[in-house]
Image (cartoon, rainbow, N blue to C red):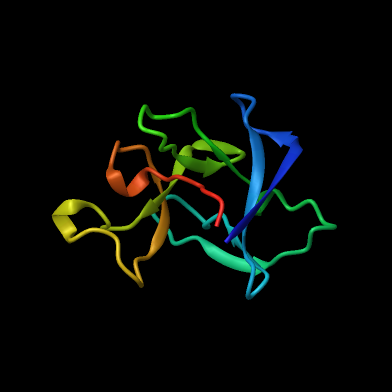
Length: 114
């Protein structure tokens, strides 16, 4: 997915927000309705400021990975549900949810040019 940065909207730590957009479907990842619930997809409109699709990255966790969290609640992180080593890791079809930081590998992300 592409990510577009907004310097207008920042989180409480001052990090700029961005949207995560599937280039093929033009859908953006939207905040879930509550903690532990799956994130949602919604049509992306670059002309509309929709805070429910804005995310920020944390500081570097020391290995070039960061958490990705809701712009308006940095305590909830994007989490590959049951994507930790104990459950066999992340694979196609893994549900993506929002979860409090548990220091899991399934909560650490790296955005790289594709």
